[in-house]
Length: 466
Image (tube, rainbow, N blue to C red; front, top):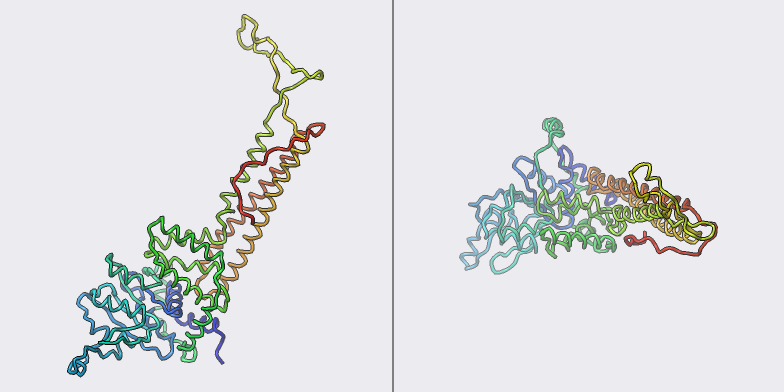
């Protein structure tokens, strides 16, 4: 009996990751791309396990043909697509023998892919996108599941950009870090790697069932809103993401959800976006930073905006505490007092001793005024409490997602969790400040009798309801 899909995929991932130092995320995303029928591009220097990743990926699929080739600027189409058929030429047909070559492969690894000439790249465009190869007068269907490309750098020209866009997952690969260097040396003396057993590997029927389930995965409105926000942000940063790529991104995230037996994509699936959108490591890091700070935090109710609202109430309280009124005596006349400046300053004409109006009495407020202020703060506190509950729910959802996700490791989800925890702490602090402002309004000096005056609401930024 086959294990259920998430358990089976987790077992495959564990085998593919075995002995791979600091390559877990590359393994997972490469496999996810293949499950979605998409392609992966590794960008990095030689000797960083790019070819090993592709060879291991091949073993995750049952009865899958594998093709591998290193391209140079002298490479010819025969190296990828097969030699010309002599018999076909004798019959005035221009056809190739493709058996054992790229058009016949299920998993392909093409090293230094951008060093190929334009003729090869143009042929690859159709093969990667439509899974078809122009062979003579007809088109040959190709069984390609996924292609893995590798390059040291991406050249900037029109054909290269079109080809670059065919790789949905773009993974910068660097040398193992200093922290992982000892583990790398230890892994080098380990026993040979064992691929997944045949009964564990995936076949075409498994992929078809996964695609069928992915087609039924729903996309929440909040998910679409964040995607639209990121798309608009890319426009300002001159990061181009084609409409075709956005469609493919959503499909890959549907597959990610279906692979974990989820009926809808999760907000946290968006943490995969850096490798699906931005073209290089620096811009991928910027997207990751934005997502870690944005996911689970609504812009219209963010701590920054909420802080300005609380500060508006604190400022109003301070103004009302410092406000003074004219002081009147029992007859209703303004009180006067004589200052003592004559003792401190020479005043030959005695002007300093002249009677002056006193403004020393603090303003007092009626019950209507104080009650209105308290109600305003109570409304704010209610919204803060609702938002705090929302953040707490997001924290719980992220913890559950991190525990079950096949495609994101703990280090990646930890950044979003840290940001949510910081947001929750900021919300708690703002709630305490708002409560202190409420107490301050309650402690305002009161009139002996209510004058019925209701103040204008405190002016502040509008907040969305929590």
